[in-house]
Image 1: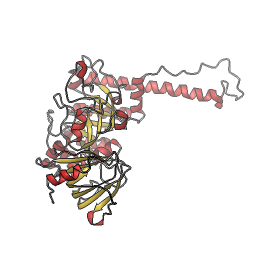
Image 2: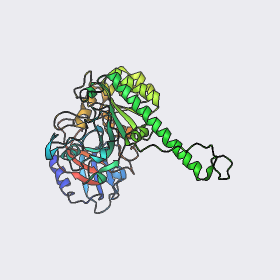
Image 3: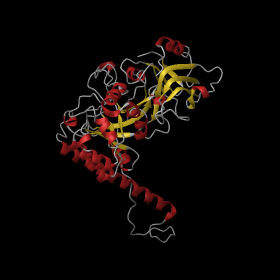
Length: 432
């Protein structure tokens, strides 16, 4: 692999420091990992002024427009996608009190709070957002963290923008739930796994009843608008014995959110690590028919057939995280079993509250997953699971121009990330 010097690389980057947002820029790569196809040696990517990729291919065939600045890197990959994070709700200061409070990922007043929205707490200017971006992460699936039976809603954001509106790619994507000991350590009830499942089932049944009431009221309203009359004779006269039309229930934001899971508008993201808790999540999916995504899933290698049969993707815990019965080889095991998965950074109880996605994938690569599959697990695979692979996850014409630039092998510890581009905007020029 051709390796470009860090000094010359920084000179090229410095020339781009004044580029406005969504400016056109070309990137010349010693090796380009498109992820959707085979790597291309000595390649060029042209990022358009509309923030999308205009052209990808061998440098010998590139027609770079006059006046476009050209950035060089030894290796270029798609911007990394963190499949599960709390960044933006959790901050770098690790403070829960006072004017510098920056820990909003878990509300402990109730174990069931599906009405909480990540978009109402996300801080686009949080230092931690910039920090993860400097390590190549351009897209976050973030929101309320594990620790409550239902902790709230997640969102998808780009790691740029002055406010949440500019950062948001998808305001609501999943509803975050947790099964197991992590819940009982934060709340008096549920105190056991069985109680947690019973509470969650009860909440889902309540949400279904709420949806039924809303539907009946809407149908009655449609009939009252001329589709039918009370006596069914179509003359507009009311039947003296007609029952009062069903009225809609008072609005309930919690039941609405759970109802969106039942209707398929949102996925239920269940953090579960033991075989017993993951099996409970699969039973819930079978009972209610919602779209389930398993989160963390430390013992998933013991439940491969059941997970594959259910068609459930896994957002796997960080490879090096301290989970009971976790394994460096789980990512490779899931890949070999044909189970869709992505590697995530999750949540840590200490500063900086998140792990480095690139390093976690590197450990998985070294433990059976291999370079290409590891890179896919932090780019295209999470994009597919999140349903946004039409925009991100690979380097293809028409997709967002989100790129990570390296001075060497991305999974080699001595390599550096020397540039990050999001939608054609050069946002990072420091080698880390």
